[in-house]
Amino acid sequence: MMQSRTVEIWVGLFIAAGMAALFVLAMQVSNLTVVNTDEGYDVTARFENISGLKVRAPVTMAGVRIGRVTEVGFDPRTFEAVVTMHISSQYNELPADSSASIFTAGLLGEQYIGLEPGGDMEVLKGGSEIMLTQSALILEQLIGQFLFSKAAEGEAK
Amino acid sequence: MIGWLQRLGQSGLGFFERLGRAHLLFYNILAGVPSVLLRPSLLIQQVYSVGVLSMLIILVSGLFVGMVLGLQGYNTLVDFGAEESLGTLVALTLVRELGPVVTALLFAGRAGSALTAEIGLMKATEQLSGMEMMAVDPIKRVLSPRFLAGFLSMPLLAAIFSAVGVMGGYFVGVGLLGVDEGSYWSQMQSSVELYEDIFNGVIKSVVFGVVAGWIAIFEGYDALPTSEGVSRATTRTVVHTSLAVLGLDFILTALMFGDN
Image 1: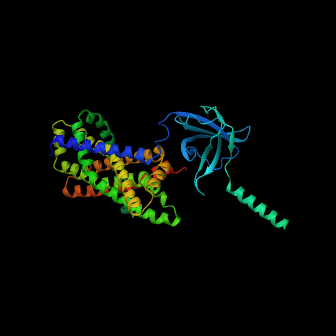
Image 2 (image 1 turned 30 degrees about the vertical axis):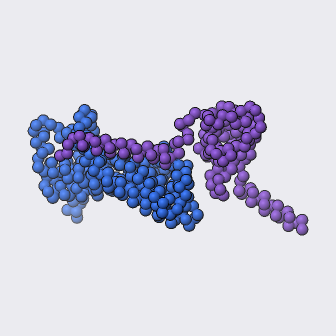
Image 3 (image 1 turned 135 degrees about the vertical axis):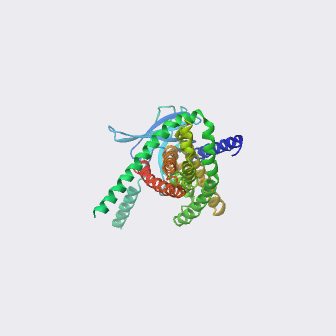
């Protein structure tokens, strides 16, 4: 039988290694690092169509992630989608007339929101709404329009 | 015909009798857990023999499973030009499935069989009855610390397995096959959810820890007190634990990930 001190040291090492592995999985492997840990503010935007935008999708400005989508709702009176996004508190000087568009990462990638800065001196605060929005491009509609215009061209000739 | 029916009934009754004894033992072990917490030295000794001594096999197999996942995943993904998603594939496979399941299977072979043999031999050499004669409850003294050690060790071992596997996939994917390092980690981070994936993996391994410890201890405690009985009980531990883990894994996966 081993010395109980040695046993205790090994057990301590084992538990520390297990905890460290869980910590690595939580911090390095999962996307815990951005959300939940920092404070920030919520802004909303209304879109005619959000296509496949999901909760937790990134919100970017100039390609840099500055927040995440926290809620996707539907306004039954205006028939618009209401998207709530959470923006990190360090980015608290975004102009109030910034515009929001829904983009797709790559051809088949996931949807995300891209913000374009405006020129207003006022800044976005918690609860404010982004007025200028551009809906998602729906691939089927684009193809439909393309076919339609091709057919119209053919008739003109 | 009657004889055949009788044998069928006998084996059915025997099965339910064992199931009942196993459940009674389970409640007795659980009732003994508080007294173990008052004497942590017993628990530490068992965590050493169940957890620490299993760590080497977990580390080595985790590394190699991760490396194989890296190789196989790369070969499949490169056909679709999606080799950047290798990190996602490796991490989700390990955290959701292979981490808990392979750890439980290795645990059954490495630690469960040892537990059964130890307890069975204690019974065969009448150490357990000796303890009862000295008014020491063998369930509290011998069985509960071993059960608790398995319960505590399994999630830690599974976490070590997954973390080492992710590193193994990183070595092969980024080091050997030339996947971009940044996209390996960022694709992984953008698709692995803390609650959805990692917590559910931990829950799985906790369930497997309870089941593996329970089966190993019951088989040892219920073994015939002969050398043949102990050897049979050890075999049954490995077989039953593996079957239970694989079956439960399907049920848990269906409950956790089935609805999306």
